[in-house]
Image (cartoon, rainbow, N blue to C red; front, side, top):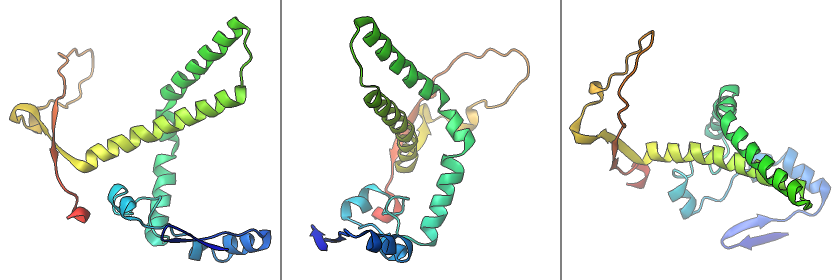
Length: 176
């Protein structure tokens, strides 16, 4: 059955055989997503992994995602976040045990995994957006060369100075 959700044609399949045919042999035909004006505006001109048309570019994006974002180092970098969320879960369970109240463990585990995934994604997404949409300059006209980024061995104590930056807006090329 062919439905139109807005202006987008949507195929509804109710047969397992036809669904298998679509997913195995016709997958490239049905793999592209609708590129709406909102998606183009928000998702980098539909060049991100979620909205990019299926092809060589999308395959490269998927390869980078798997090799970089889901690498062992990246997963380990969020270890403290997972520990923090798990500690929060333990507090909820401990509180319910003191009250003698029943808990829905399945619901708590879904909330836990959703919270961890959301925070991991939002941290990366927020940082990527900050770097993409703004150029940054140091406060007071300081130059990046003025910052001492050298490494030294032994015990070194530096005065802690805040790194203050000024965002400078610019328009990406695809919005011009």
